[in-house]
Each structure stands twice: as structure tokens, then as C-alpha cells.
Amino acid sequence: MKAAIAALKKKDPVMAGIIARVGPYAMQYRDPTFETLVRSIVYQQLSGKVASVIFKRLHEAAGEERLTPEGIMRMRPEKMRRVGLSAQKTLYIRELAKHSRRGKVIFEDLPGMEDAAVIEHLTRVKGIGVWTAQMFLMFALRRPDVLPVADLGIRMAMKKAYGLDELPKPAEMEKIAASWRPHTTVACWYLWRSLENVAAL
Image (cartoon, rainbow, N blue to C red; front, top):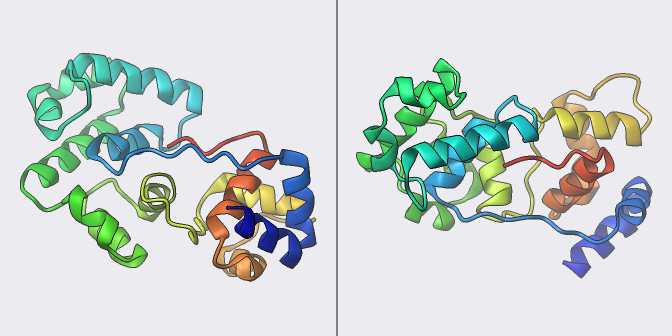
């Protein structure tokens, strides 16, 4: 990790300044499991604080040490709604559970896949888009070179740090990030931290 940070500091003076302000790199990783992906669905478009409460309630309602597809399917949709999940997210989580039980999503296979293949595999499930798959790549599979161009936090941090007039579009983000490769995930973590808004997976 020291080599990655040293490379970022050398290649991008703006990133060097962010790294100096934020301090040591401390990405919090999770296991590449069904539970982690359910958690990321819960966290979609919610503040970390609210999502944390809902996820904890879901966990308690399932009555499992670790969430499983079987545990989710044992719950009625109405029970899942009562913990604070929207109808849409309830549907998405149940779809993921069904795909997992049928062997259409195999978590054990994901670590051996290329990034693009992981995204293709996961986005087959209704409710799992590219952003969610990219968060899984970064925080669960520990992939080092992921740039989530749809992430609002990354876009806001880039706008602020690089003095842009507007939130950057994907092409501009890719241009800024070109010098970060192959350590883009580390740079993204620093951008999130620069806003004091860690990505909540």
C-alpha cells in the first residue's frame, strides 16, 4: 500500500495534497458474501446512519448470525418492509436471494473473475447496478483499480479538489483518474475521506 500511495503522490499533486490532509489509508473491507451484497443494496441512496439502522433491523429480523438466501426467503415481504426497507429494495434483496439459491449468483466464483466479469455476473440481478457491483469490487473483492463514475461523493470530491465548475461527467473523471492507475481504488478512498463522507458498503 505504501507503494500505491507514493505513486499517487508522485503522479498527481492534487491527490498528494488530499493524502497529506486525510492521513493514513484505512479502507474497511468486508467479506465477498451474500450478506455484504445485501448490505450494499440497503445502503443505496441512503445516508450511512439511516442505512445502518435498517440493516441492523433486517439482520435481527432474519435471526441469523450471518444473512443467507434461505434466511431472507423465510421472511415475508411485509416483515422486511417493517424493518424500514422500501418495497423496491425488498424486491431486490429477495431477487438476489432467489438467484443465489438457484446458483445463478455464485459468490465463491467471484474472487477468480476479472472486474468486468464480476460486474456482468452481479448486474443480472434486478436492483444491482454497476455502482453496487463496483462497491463490491472495491470493498469486498479488494480490487485496486476501480473508478465508480456514477458515485456522487467521488464526483463532488473531484469538483472541489480540481476546481471544476460543474460535477464531472464520466469522460472527464476518466481523464483525471488516468494518472492514478493502477491504484484508482486508493485514490477514490481518499476522495471520499476528503469530504468526510466514507462510502458506506
